[in-house]
Length: 479
Image 1: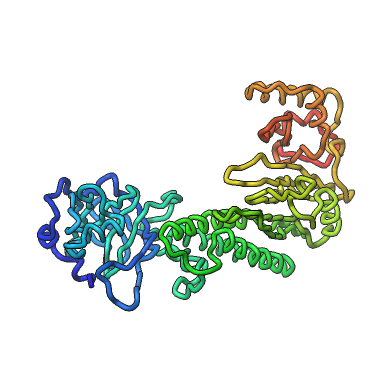
Image 2: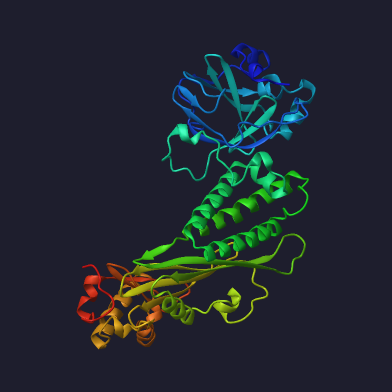
């Protein structure tokens, strides 16, 4: 069994095992490895016969910097020298592979291809570490204490965190030491998926704390439904996949589905307008679709509804539900019919663009994702708080020919930039529809200014609209 002390042998030992003369040496890491990496996979080394497998470095970060290697003990070291060499199979993992099986075992571990393997050696005051370039060209492999670890550079790292924080293991949304289900074990086997699960759990926890008892109950119920959908969609509700390819596909699916859920939960916030509180209530359901057996086919439906509490809440909830009917399957709500062949994710959510004592302006968006994003359905809802009803365009603007002509001119200018030629009748119809107008503190937005396959928005600064504002109107923009 290869131990920590065995891995920290002097450079001469590795040369005896077959490492060729370095092609590069110095205190600066090669550009191909410089920067941040994270441990994403941990697997038993062929020479490890211990009954249990400990993987203490799983999800930890390593950082290759000039003159040092940042990471958890015992990897971290300074000063550090870096070398590049070509290593034959029998020299991999500092000679730990049996010589007569080195090629086959190295290939199974993903580090042996045609010819010798590119190896990055980091020499520290107390020994050295070998990082082998994997055959996928994007990963590095190294061994420690009977475990072969895989490193990859993170896709979502903006560099804002210091190296000392990055090297800490990325947590999952649960204790990986107690992982029992197939989904949990696969999540813990991949650092990126672990990170996404942790982000989803953190977003869920923050939202749950901010919600009322009724909102929390809805959120917990929706999350339970989502987890059932994830198990079905990724085929992780039963036994562990046997083949490497099946496991890889399951982990990829878990990452994609979990990441999308994390993004949704992060987008949901509680809004306070004086004593009025508007919070998101999430409902999740999913339906199985016909499958040919090669892949799971389902439709996931997430419906986020703003629910108010406090003074004026009953009016807000009544007016919103009259404008956006709820309680129906989401495909019926958005498409006015059942869609039995629809596969993917169907989501309806909202954004509050402006809220004050006079009005609340919301934009309600519904879209479907089936691998590629389809044009969303967008509708504005503006609530007149004083009158307790939907606001009309006449409650805000003096709607006359001068107003229509000014907006048409803005539409035509933007349309020409996109090689479009909207018809006057169509523009006037869209201008007159209050469901196409949303409002912000310093501008108004015409959501669908002309007929087209792609959604368009026309932003109009408030100062251009001042001549048309009603003196007693709802919208009091910042000028």
